[in-house]
Image (cartoon, rainbow over all chains, first blue to last red; front, side, top):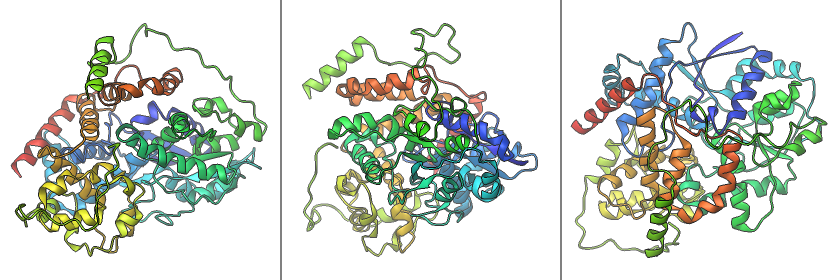
Length: 338
Length: 200
């Protein structure tokens, strides 16, 4: 067993639940022992750096400090999400490159009785660990249901192979790790020229037209090359291409149907694990065609409707203001007077 | 940001604007790591590599020239940092290893401080996101999206409904926020970090 500290990141419990479920399912056959960092916090995504520098790095460094305290022999932190991976790696690298930043962050951490010496942990992305630590031979040995005949567009997005402070990837713009993995699963990997192009990130919330065009390019290129599905390593990429495919189609008047799955889901499928355990059916653009192509029964289409009022809310009350009639009226009025 | 802004390539600097020669230095010193901003050779590889340059009013190359020329107000008003998607294409291609994406973050912060941005959509989104993280220690998509859409895209709400409902029914979005255990510790750390930055 190889031991790693896991930094899941916020989206693994929500938007990218399929990623987390499938990761848990394939961990055992791969001999991957992941220990979740206790009480980790959000990495700040791409939002905090633009607001305030030192707090943004202190936010990330709290996770590094906690990870180090809980490391118990292992030095490797694994992040499955691209933005989390980059932020953890970035904080570690910049605290080394600019000692002043390291000092200020540590002074802030000290108020919480924490500290972190940059360079004391190794920050890795999940794909990197699976390819270079576990190895393709172990993966091949686990394949009981080869994905023969499936045409897959390997899509990494931007933040895994770039900027790559610690030189872990085969290339910044056309890395081959994901291709090798998919080939080991028996899939037909298409030559996908946009494999490290950006999915638009948070642009769907800020400048939708910018985002829709970036999403369209990615889907159209995979579609032209007759891919059955795209496969990604990043929750944000999955959300943008899956969740916003409908709106992008409406915006351009197109009718693309391009499912996008996490690489861990395909690994599980090839390892013979049931699709339901791997989070199949959670995607908004159905990946039933992928399951059909390899002769696997899809989980039932209609999920149970959510209760209108959660009886026992586990979390905290909703922060105000949220959608209610008055707010909508106010906002509409404002939009009209504009 | 919906308007397409066409800028002539021979824009002359405003003669009334005072040259601010400390600007470049200030941006560099406020950027995490070693920005190498002063090493820019104006080759334009950044703009040529940028997937969203078409929506920017200035390419990164021109923006850096403006910083060097001390055009503080014009540079901080630019939509370029807000349109940057942090994809790091320019960063790995820059022959001078300028930390372009991080410089963009610095410019966002400076524009917010000086209230010089033209469109509040992006700054508001960042503020709301960070507000949730500071309060709970985790992001909270439903709260973030509903607050943000209500304020900036109320007319987009109907077209967003299928996706929102899909995400909720598939339990890909939490109805209520989740708070980390030691939020007190996180708040204290962030407060101290803010104080330290103010002293600088």
